[in-house]
Length: 568
Image 1: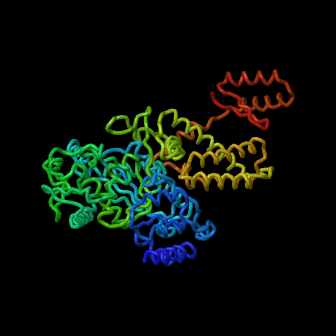
Image 2: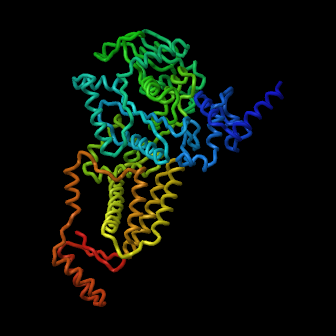
Image 3: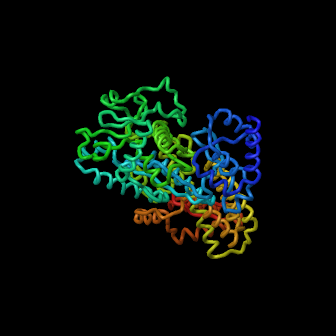
């Protein structure tokens, strides 16, 4: 019988890898479970994964791997850019990204706790989500994005009591501020921003189901997830239980009463029984009077809006444990299937090489830091052009450097726009091939786990080459148009060209500061100096330079024999 089983497995494998009918794919993919590829279709790398994975598993992962191995030409007929790699925190490796349902991508991301302004460290995560969504959309995917808002927890209750305001008034205020800041940074909106307080019934349903399945228990009116009931607990964070501190699963500590109530120190709260300190924040439900724990909120809202299984879950690296680990445990225990295929986490933002956080008091908010449209755009560029998984050290000098980079891009685009609008004598030969290489290199960088430093380097290689053409009067109308089209295409991912909302007056001031009126007599002197240089009258050229500098301007000679005046 063992021999017969092996023959049948070989036959199934051959059928899937050779023909892989679409109907079979859809049927198996909808199961939501996973299985590593059998030896017939695995690489040396996947052999190691195969040997380390537990069994039994379903055929779904086999279909995912087979689908990933479809030839590029076959996948590109569907309008999808193939070969996209993403780093998966679950496997701690770059993996070929293939969504479970064709070109549809389900993306869930953790939003802010709306009791205060989000700081720029938080916005690194929100900008990372934006790049993920923009890049996958660029690749041809239809991304369905949900981002939650946490509007009930201990910090919110403490802030309510401090300020003497209601839960609704406090959270509505900071939710509005958050949306304004998203727009200021050109972050594409999610389909929905569900709030925890709007989905109490969904959470109660999950908690009740977990109790029925034996994964949760009630004690003194509170409900806890039984970590020992989920054998895979710790698979995301690769936990060392022997050295774990009591209460580590709570993400911020537990009270003495909760420590006594819990059957195991590793168990975490799903529902917290009402205490007088909670004031008006409670719900009367079939499981009792109280409020939800932090982790169950995301599981319930993710399931409500995107279903039992999603393609990508994003968040800061600090959410990997306990929050995301606990999400996995309660969601998979309840649904019986893999919650998420790809876990994507961004690194911290540091100030003076120290993690930025509200608890340390070293945080900066978007509205405190970014006072002009250029600063807003520069901060966006500073973040999105960095390697998202690495720690990012913020400083005023770093923001100034990003501003300088954008000024160069703006000036380059303005010069191209002038030629595209007015035409030119040059033919701009070679721009098309430069643009094609730029796009190809940009996409290659982005395919490699959204390597935006590499992708941006390709853009500036293109900028440098076309600047040389501009300086030598070799850029024509068609070439300028091709260069502008290339910039617009790449900006679909980078998102640095936009009108910053709420900063109209600052934009006018910024434009005015950049618009310097050159007196007619100085302009005439500049023309005279150009003629003196042409006549090799170096003495007169130097005299004019000195006279111009005495008037508060500097002469900058540029390639092609031209000169320009710059205020000191």
